[in-house]
Image 1 (cartoon, helix red, strand yellow):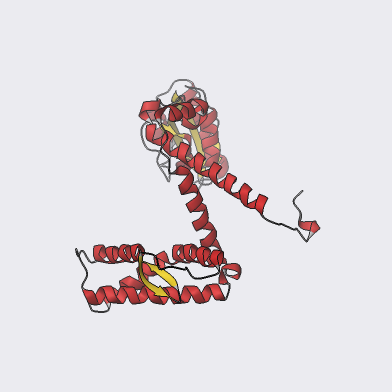
Image 2 (cartoon, rainbow, N blue to C red; image 1 turned 120 degrees about the vertical axis):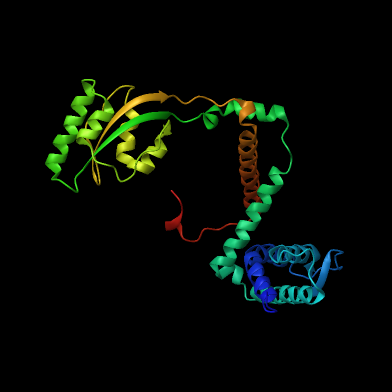
Length: 298
């Protein structure tokens, strides 16, 4: 690693954290309008009266050390990293003076996103007890229902190696022979072409069928009864004939098997509710005047 590498790493890591840094610092600066009266204990430096967080500096040092696969960084490298943070703080303060957070979309989005994340994190901070999770699971069964999975035979006839009408006749013949009980493998070997994308073996979700064979074919597959053979279905490279072998209907997953998923969804919902309540409070305290009546939502 060359001497310039720490600088490059520092710039890259600072750039990654710039959005969050701008957001949090800008919210604080704009909200207060004045520098803090006392220096916080957690400051590693002060720039124009504003503290530079020792914790954020420590995280930056740790990230660079991890990238360099080193336990510690030498004093010179740590000094360079601190200088970069001071430069970032100076640029941030100048950006706030210029009100870039009002006119620059990237800065505006960063502030809004950081505040949303902060409000949601506060709402999600309290760990739910098991009874709350069980009640949430019982009240939202549709969220935890497994989707149908199907086992499908799919024969394909290409329109790239023969005229469309001929391909359609061949697909109809495949469907006829399957309906009278001919073995799929024999019919496929005699009449079908190799598909561009072959379905994976085993039970598949409709979404997997869609990814491999396209939305039209997936829609037809979703409507088939067990043992039913479809009509020739046109897709971009040709015709598909489908036969449904098995269908595993969706069922509600057991609570103990998906406890982590229930908890995550519960906390996500609570975060959304916390944000709605927070916005409602802001609206109640704010003075809002819509000047262009033509743009008022109907």
